[in-house]
Amino acid sequence: MTTNSNKKLTILFCKYKSICEPGVEHAFHIMGHTVDELTEPFRSDFDSGYLEILSSKLIEKNYDFVFSINFQPIISRVCTIFKIPYLCWTVDSPCSTLYSDSIKSPFNRIFIFDKKEYIKFHSYNPKNIFHLPLGCDYDAWNSLKLTENDHQQYDCDISFIGSTYREKCIYNEIEKKIPPYLKGYVDGIIQAQMNVYGYNFIEDSLTKQFCNDFSKFIDCAPPTSEYIEDQRGIIANTFIGEKCTEQERLLTLTNISNHFNIDLYTMSDVSSLPNVHFCGAANSKTMMPKIFKCSKINLNMTSRSIQTGLPLRIFDIMCAGGFCLTNFQAEIPEYFSINEDLVVYDSQQDLLSKISYFLSHEDERKTISQNGQKKVIENYTYEIQLKKMLTICGFIHNNCSL
Image 1 (tube, one colour):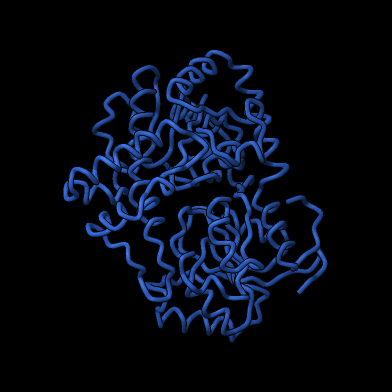
Image 2 (cartoon, rainbow, N blue to C red):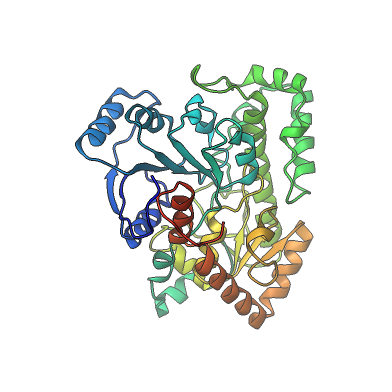
């Protein structure tokens, strides 16, 4: 499988409309590789129609490997039958499909962006599961030139682009059904976790008895017998973690809007946030890069289900040359210099203090945003990250550090 760095690869990219797919495909093209797309949707891990279409693709043409964003068991199973490498890169955490027994296939090459999640799953396929931080599409984020109208529309003190998690929080559907002692337990964990940045202890706080009692009100059984059962992990991340994210984002947006002007781009319900400037949804291709560039401060609030890693939003903000103010995540110091490339906060009061400081210190703000953009461009574009991936898999020789 090992080739030289000039080898041009032929790749089948199985897509499902992930926000980062265009950037990843663009990077493959920049590297000189040929990319064919499969955009047919699938309904389940055993969708017979998709199995037939993917199999036909692999029969018709010789591919060096199949690629997708996030791990897809149905793709893994087909690649195992055809004995062709399947490369994937998680962008979501938790990535529930990693619980599928199909992650054990020797033809998988699974790259997980969140180090704690990587540690959790690595033992299931030690030779073929790797940790790789996310990246960004420099060309996309910097191809749009700002106009006077753009400045009129997007210039602001602070912006946040993302969900409040109200519409995503499954826990809200069962909150009124569970008994008070379970609700009190959940509320206590959430309140404690909201005061701690850089360490997620939700899963560690759940006793076996709590999980057994809580599971009576939810469906946390594996979708099929092919999935590993992880009752505690599902409850911690899918239910309590999402509720913690919702509560944290609503609190943070409320606190900021009580003291500063903030533009919120979201499709979520904002009725409980009367002081925010609601701007509707932001198109990721035509609007988001301009918002990042025009905002004095771009806020990142990492979903609590991302335990140590950095979400795409951080890389995208910095790649566009925006100033990034983010909650602390354990992996940040591994890739960036705090207060030089980006700024972090470790409490609500710290957040408000840093907003106040950097709104009034433009030169420092601009220096940090320039440093951050330079660091991302030199180390974390999709092209750079994919070269690392292909090097690990033995497709190319590359000197970039991991």
